[in-house]
Amino acid sequence: MPRMGETVDEGTVNEWFKQVGDEVAEGEALLEIGTDKVDTEVPAPVSGTLTEIRVREGETVPVATVLAVIN
Amino acid sequence: MTDTPARDVQLELFRKMTVIRLFEKRAYDLFMQNLVKGTTHLGTGQEAVAAGVSQAMNDDDYTFTTYRGHNHVIARGTPLTPIMAELLGRENGLMRGKGGSMHLLDVSHGILGAYAIIGAQLVIANGSAWSAQYRGTKQVTVAFLGDGATNIGAFHEALNFAVVWQLPVIFVCENNHYMEYTAIDSVTAVKRPAADRAQAYGLDPIVVDGNDVEAVYRTAQMVIKKARDGHGPSLIEADTYRHGGHSRADPGKYRPKEEVAQWLAKDPIPRYRAILLDRGVDEAALAEIEKTAREAVDRATEEAKAGPEPRLELAATNVWADGGHSWRN
Image (cartoon, rainbow over all chains, first blue to last red; front, top):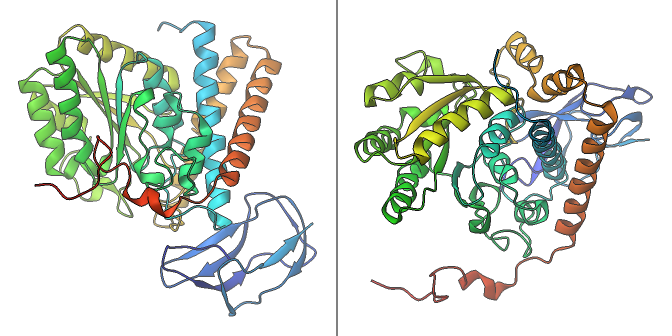
């Protein structure tokens, strides 16, 4: 979970655009997160297969929480 | 038929844009990993302006930039590691980790600061230009601004006195068509926010394709020569587009998708790469430049990450030029 502002300590997963098993390309929108500062899309940092989603839609987690795993 | 710059200049323009693009992409990734302290404003998509203008400058010329200023600092030759380390708030940063992305400064490469107050750099740049004029050094000062700054009082004050005193200063407006979240044309009385206003102060309304690096370079060469020869200031409005949002928390969704797509198709880097290949530049030479740039950004990232957090005692340093920090009246 990225820190979307200096005073923002948590974020909510609004929506996953990909499912486990999907191929994702670097830079492709992976999910949308929401914070009290902004709602924004998070792009895939690398290309690969989305093997695990650890935070479901609607869940709020602290910044730096691992959201998903791409192999 | 316009003059084509020498081959080594062409490759240097391509190299500068490539390094900037990769640096900005890395800065974005590091932000998403929570490693960048504070916010940053990326210049992705606007590389041709920084590369073209800097290429026309002498080593001892001065640059003033904005909070969207990584581009201009990299283009002047500041090493990548202290810039990256500054973004990460580390002691090996340009400002020893105390300034962050918006306050880069490197006097040794002519960078007299990045200014986060919109338009503030323009009047200060006049001071730098006045100093060079007074000392007779022939140095030229280049001050970058965004389109939004053209609706700020300081912009008009700076243009007025630059002309009154015939200062060797060049104002370069990177018109990326959006202020923070607002389209510039929805809040501006004239079509060309910088160039149309320049005419009010007796300057030519120079507009250049800011995604055409050689057009920027040629234009900058012309106005910098004019300033160096003692014929006064100029303003360039460079038409360009930021690929991302205003700052990293901004997805930029206020921009029409078709508009974004049109500008992505005019991306200055692939565009110039294709031109160079057309002219017979070896593909391997360009690939080598890209590889070297990637390695430089990787190295800067590792060296920045390895830098220590600033020590507490550094908080009271770099306040006065003589090293002191006590209150003075």
